[in-house]
Image (cartoon, rainbow, N blue to C red; front, side, top):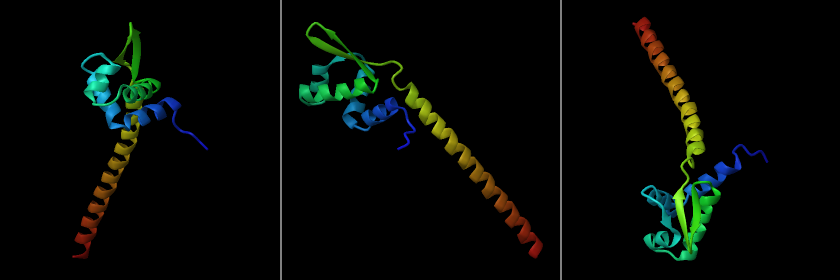
Length: 120
């Protein structure tokens, strides 16, 4: 099987596919939080939140640090750079295709207009 994407992109897009994990990322935008704070915020068990944080950590979107008995979570500052670059490249490809389609449609309209004038 041919794999086109690096493994980290696979992990990050899989992590982003879950609404709770996206919510955790949004919550961490306002500052660091412990796993128990995140669990309380999202109304889930500590074990459940640990699993979500582990997925985000593997994807490189979040880092954790043990401070005493508490594990603090923070956004990885460059966590979405690679994903944003990949999406930007896809947008550029599709924009070029749409631009080419617009040009083709405009050319067809012009030809139709000219052909309509000749028939009269």
